[in-house]
Image 1: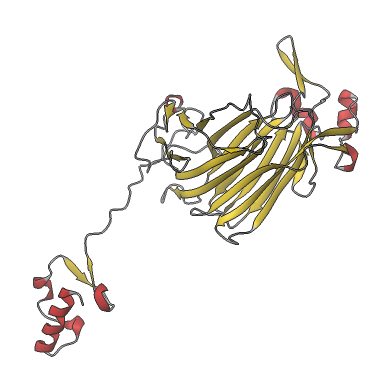
Image 2 (image 1 turned 45 degrees about the vertical axis):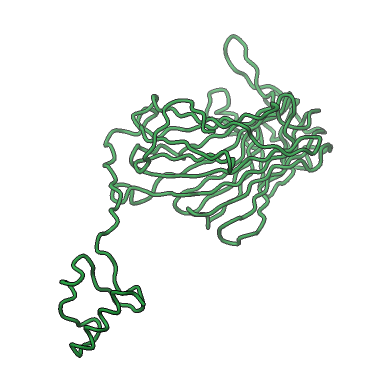
Amino acid sequence: MNLRLLILVGLAFTQGKDLFDLDGVDELFPHDEKVEGGGDEIFLHDEKTPQPQWPPISSNRCSQSTKLKVMYGILHFETSLKKKPMTSFEIDIEWNALEFHLTENTKKHGGVYIAYTFGMKNGPGGYFGIQIHADGGQFIFSVWDADRTNKADGIKHVKKSSKLAWPMDTENCKRNCQDCGVPYLKEIGKKGFTTGTKCTKNHPSMKAGDRYKVKLECVPDQDTINTADFEGFKKVHQDVLGEVDRDVTGSVWEVKVIVVKGENQGSEIPIGTIMFESAEIGFNRLGTFDEMIGCNKCNAIYHKDTRYGPKIGGDDRSVRKPTKMYGDTKYYKSSCKKYFISGSKDETSISFESGPLTEGVTKTKTQIW
C-alpha cells in the first residue's frame, strides 16, 4: 500500500472521519489535490501539463509565399533504380498527429497528402499515396500517359499517346484529365479529353493514430486489352487528334492497402489497377513528398507522419531498402518556417512535421540517416 495512503488511513481512524473528509491533509501534502477514487491513485499532483500555445493566424491572404509548403524525401539505394528497376513496393505509413487551430480554424480546413512518385523508363509515371483531413481520408493511385504532349515554338500541344496509362479497374479508376488547368487542356478537358488514369478510394474512418501498409505490385507483367472494353476514349479524342480505341499491350500494376492499425484492422483495401503501355517492366524513378491539401496558412494546422521503409523488389526476386535518406524543404520560399524532417536508420523511417507545434527545423537538403 502507498505510504501516503497508510498515513491517511491512520488519520481517518483517529479523527473518526471518512477518508475524503480529513482535516490537515493540505498541511501534510501541500502540493497535492484530492480526487475521488481508491487504491494508490487517490492523489494527483496539481501541476498541470502545460497546453501548447497556438500563435494567431495571419490576416494576410493565403498565397504561395504565405502558406505551409511541400517537403521532400530523397531515397538512395546501394544499386540505383536505373541499373536495377523496382518491380514491387511496400511502405508502412503512420499518421502521428493532425491538429487544427483551436479558435481560428474551427471548421478544420486543410489536410495532408503523403505521396510516392515513380516513373517507368520509356513509359508512364505518376504517384500513389494517402490523404487525410478532419473527416477521414482517401487513397490515390494516379498515372499520366507518357507521351501525351509535344512542344513547338516553346508552346505545349497535345498529341496521340503511344504509351497510355489505362484503367483495368473501372470501379475505383477512371480516365482523367490530369493537370487540366493549363491553357492547352482547359477547354478540351471540359469535353472529356483525358491524359491519364486516376484511382481513388474513400476511407471515412481514417484518423490520426492510424497506420497503413501500401503495396504496389505487378499483376501480371504482360497483357493485352482493347481500350473500348475499359471505358474507352471520349469522342473529343477523335475530334481533336483522330485518336480512337485500340489494343494496348503492357504490364499491369495494382495498388492495395492493408489496415495495420485503425478501423477494420487487418483488412485489405484494393485501390486500383492500371495498365502501363510499355515494353519495360519496372520503375527507374522513385521519390516521396509530404504536401498540405489546399492553401494552409502558417499557424492554421499542425501535422506529423512517419513512413517505415520502403521495401522494393527487383526482377531477380530480391528485396532491398534504402541505404541513405535525405530530406528537403522550401523553407526560404514562404513566410512559414515550421518544418522538420527526422528519421531512424534502424527503423528505415522518415518523419515529416510542419505547423505551429513543430519544435525542430529543417531548412535545406539534409541527410536524415
